[in-house]
Image (cartoon, rainbow, N blue to C red; front, side):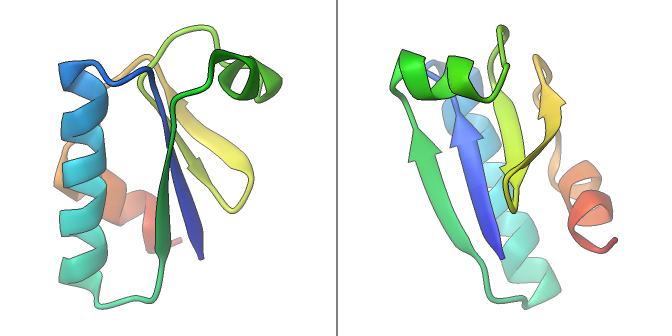
Length: 77
């Protein structure tokens, strides 16, 4: 599984990354977590508001700081 955190490095983006790492750890799943900070790549996903969470190439959340439990529900699908 590949999880991408889209954001320019703002505090919410950093917290989303930390929450994603925690959720992956809790679920004990194998996942690569990548932070994408380049604006052109973020826009390439069609995201205009960060932070955003992308799972296996699909934008699952944008413009919202998801907590660990919300991310766990998304990853458990």
